[in-house]
Image (cartoon, rainbow, N blue to C red; front, side):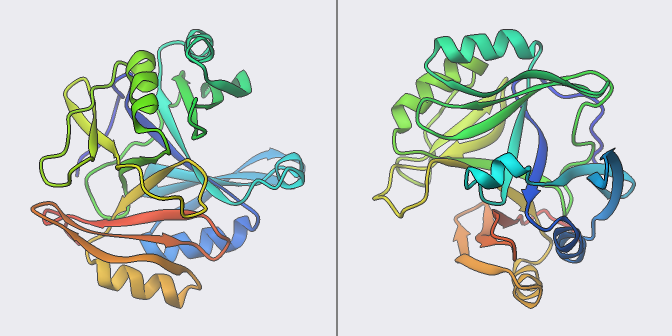
Length: 261
């Protein structure tokens, strides 16, 4: 089973769900992905839930803060990028036109992070690892595997992320207009071509591997989730579907020909 013991700088290193019903989310994702929740106290009646698969962490969930709710922040999955220096990366992002939503701060002894909104409007976090590198398992059903950036300005996003993280953006060979995201030789995500507005703000969409897409979709619906984009085949790559959990957070399933149950 592919285990992760260190992350290359510039790669996606953590997946975190902020939700308005943490208990319900724990039950839902445990059923869908077989995750085991582990609650860590972070304050009076507050917990940060680490999701584990085969005794290795694969993500987490927490409850939206009162401030987030008052500002209308919906349940969502947050994507983290590994960096060497959170403070220096934040400063560089600002110089490139980004907005800092949460200044760099320490997360106990686990690491140091910041929340950033890119110049096109998409939000992500950066992570300077200390005792915790983030996700510890990959390549098997129930693990994070890919991320797409939905943005109204593909060109501006490419310039920003290339300058900030050194990512490369080779064009897709199958889908015209799709740009792959390559970090130090590793394909980690993509930027789809700009589409007419569907009302959704710019965002990062996280993909999780499943062994059988049709079964995952059935379990999702039984658990109160919603299918947003039905099962779709990607030539020579696999199948995916975009979905929404019962609390409203969007994410995607991906069935790879190499996935195993």
